[in-house]
Image (cartoon, rainbow, N blue to C red; front, side, top):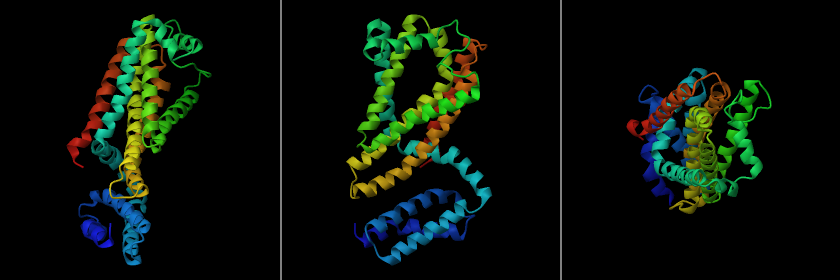
Length: 315
């Protein structure tokens, strides 16, 4: 794209950003979105070697936008609140096709594997080794004092850290491998769906449903959803590489990365809360299955309602 076309296409956004920076009280809530756009335009202008005057103009807007957003400590709290209330749900709404694709890649294999392992006991051994299957059964044995993943320590804070490490690792692999033209993200979504479905089907068949489902339903609302969202961000990266449009692959990837960052940050926060629930709530043996199921169902409804709120609040 020639510089003249680029300027004609985006000048209105630059002028709007400049106006808000001069008059912060005038619709200042739109500044975060404009700031991300200006940064993307600055990167493109440098990559395409547009005139120094245009690069300087965009750099000035980006610098002023940065200090307007992050220069004062009290603004940071507002930005965090805005992120969770508006930016994160809106990013999900804007990328809903990738979220739905990721959900299908995760849920459909999981359901099929769950039905297969529930129907035939031998199927689970095609995916897991016999030792792993016995470990799953031991974890959810109803006679245990604590249910769930084996604990090397009775300290819930230690387990909280372990859960964060494990969950973040899964989500990061699911997201980052989207750079392999989306194939890596699709693989990890399918793989994790098969693994979770296989465990669920086998334990249901073995008669451990009374311990397994009450344990996983609470933190699963956040943990499983975050894995899907990480996969959606990875698919978004892959799509930018496969179909960059009029941009170069690097330019398209930069634009996609800014959008994916919103989703990944939000998914990371969800995994943090999921680890807290698993460490301090799900593992408690004194809670009745009815209480766990009820609380987990409410949490699932809240998560789905929250993530769908972006459609009601505009782009």
